[in-house]
Amino acid sequence: MVNRRSIARLSGALLAALALCGAAQAQDYPVKPVTLIVPWPAGGSTDIAMRAIADAAAKHLGQPIVVDNKAGGSGTVGPATMAAAAKPDGYTIAQMPITVFRLPLMQKTTWDPLKDFTYVVHLTGYTFGVTTSAESQFKTWADVVEYAKQNPGKVTYATPGAGTSLHIGMEQIAAKAGIKLTHVPFKGGAETNAAVLGGHTTLQADSSGWKPLVEAGRLRLLMIWTANRSKNWPETPTLRELGYPFVLDSPFGVLAQSPVPNMKSAASVGGTSPVAGFTIARAALRLAR
Image 1 (cartoon, rainbow, N blue to C red):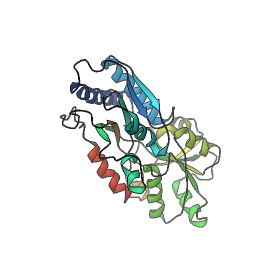
Image 2 (cartoon, rainbow, N blue to C red):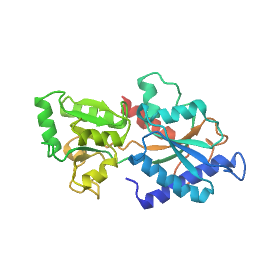
Image 3 (cartoon, one colour):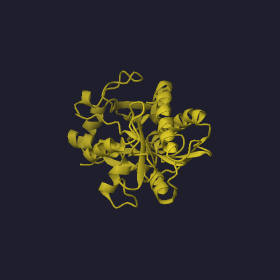
Image 4 (cartoon, helix red, strand yellow):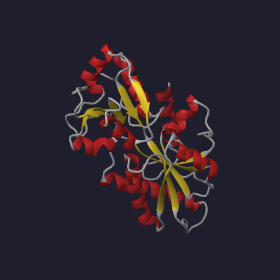
């Protein structure tokens, strides 16, 4: 999850990366607003976090960072749109989910992740979890597994899209548990929240956009996918505690249209490398196998 301290750190990393972008062009960059494409619906956990980071960075840049939501394609519509239409001048950037690398390994795409983007900065990862309605019969993940073994395919789960880390993660969990689940893809957290609350799906696998609903007692958090238990939900077990040898946080960052002059040769800033996309690529390849 992204808190105030991490927002300050992440906005600083974004600010430094944008400064490197501008250094190759003009000393007074930016001279106009910067557009930040968020490839998820407004109001979701990624949108909220990226808006907070953008607002904090904009105060130091002296120009607004305008968020433009372009949801769809498991988080790839936004970056793909930028690759097709944006000028490589550093004034249009996009949040980069790991599906930017993964989807071209699964199907034909309009972008080449190694040629069409300049990787600006790696920011952080997600807190993923699986929820069900508070009115559900399932009190624990073990209850889900027991039911699914007796009723193959009847347990449905919502995610923000096919090919996302949440989709692949749930299939890895199901394979390890020896059960069959049915995937129902949506565009983002608002839709997955509505799906599980309304009983349209049995489960929801998503990042922490479910937090207010869990705290309000409307959703039940069955597990989280982090390395350790969360301080926010200390009673909720991790995947590893449940017997699954996985830690899934789907690292993400920010990219720009390619080529932005000198961006790739810029030095590491604040411990965060502007070419950290290559690390993310390796992680994507491992998950896609």
